[in-house]
View 1: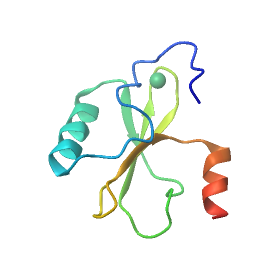
View 2 (view 1 turned 45 degrees about the vertical axis):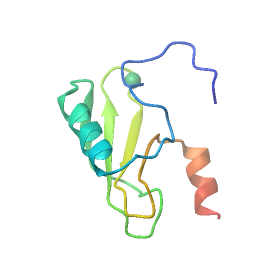
View 3 (view 1 turned 45 degrees about the horizontal axis):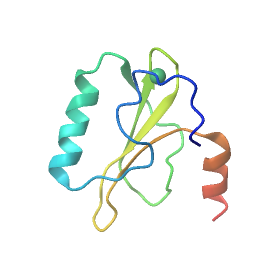
View 4 (view 1 turned 180 degrees about the horizontal axis):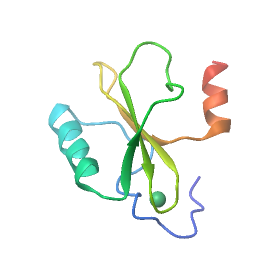
Length: 93
Ligand SMILES: [Zn+2]
């Protein structure tokens, strides 16, 4: 969806984008850790139930939850918001 009214401070990377490699992933993870709008919270339901490592970060401003899926080559990892509908669709795949 490209209909965001206002971009929140948590919009620091294009949603759904994968990582170009480990350095890209680690650099990004460091950026999140240093950014005070993000608070790490426990993972409720992983996006892909195939044993990929995943971290959840809640935005303290808009309260959206972002998931950071660790790359597991050839899977390049992912950064995306929790979206109930989309996530349900994934589970039906
Ligand atoms: Zn936000």
